[in-house]
Image (cartoon, rainbow, N blue to C red; front, side, top):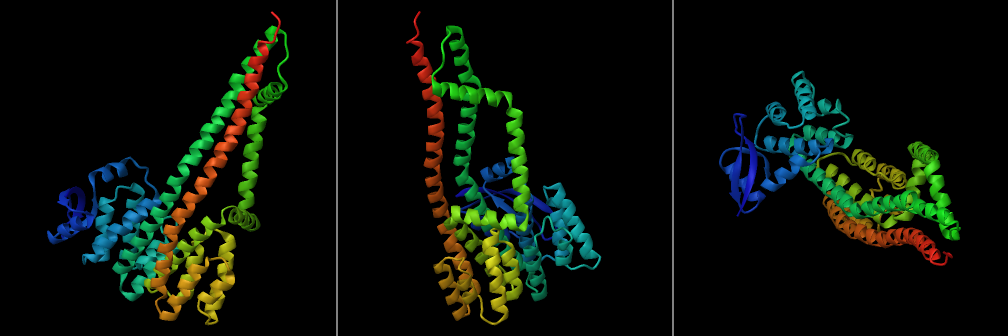
Length: 397
């Protein structure tokens, strides 16, 4: 048995906090519901501490808002009362103001989806369209529950990618700092020693020293060139042509990882939309918007055209030749059996797991390449320094 901290609300709207003992989080939620209160947050104590020291983001606030609103609506509370409770308990000041603004719009006669649409920086178009479909079908609580699952899975995938890339980033930073220290601080000491002895340095050491002196004297030019190059590059990839060419290059560099990532993202989004009652054509347009790689996204345009012509999505996706064969086969089976939404979710789950393996494989290949590159550069610097040291013993005294 474990101890879980919780925040909940009574049917009258009063907020209560405490701790409860249960075998797992699901059991804790059930015990709280049976006691007559509506759980909003249930977490192990250490998770609560971790969350407090973690920087909040708009995506985290959106996930929290969706989870809590889904719990309140599932318990039978009306929308305006649920929003009023959330505006009181929200830890984010910005989110509190947004919820109050949404509540005001609803009380003035706007629909929930229209009220959300006034805050596009917080609520993406995909989110708003799913809410609109839930309102039209009278299943807003169900749609919010599916949105919660979608946001959770997206967050887990992003966190996994970031956690895997931490080591390569640390390696690049530490290796770069080491090289800069050797070039700008350690090597210049040798030029002073040899100048006093009246001898010349070995050729490799001279080359490094000239590079080091140039770096120290003209660092501002180097820095300006790097900054200017970065600005030019950023502006270039903001253009349609530049973004397409850059995405094409990334697809050649790590095609397996990108294809699996975009397949999982597209299928989970499309499956979630179809389950929520969004029409196929609208769902396809929204699912296309979540694809970051423009090469793959442009290929998806033909899928919408094929769906309009009554070809479904399996055949146009096969013609686009951007998704893996297994995914295409599973989508085709889903269409033929009338279980397209369920099969899309299975494809997403399959490729999210496969993506984790592909990322680990890519990083395991990237790490030795980076270590070897850093080793060659630092090794050349160290050998040049040793050659200078050994040449001192050959000087006549």
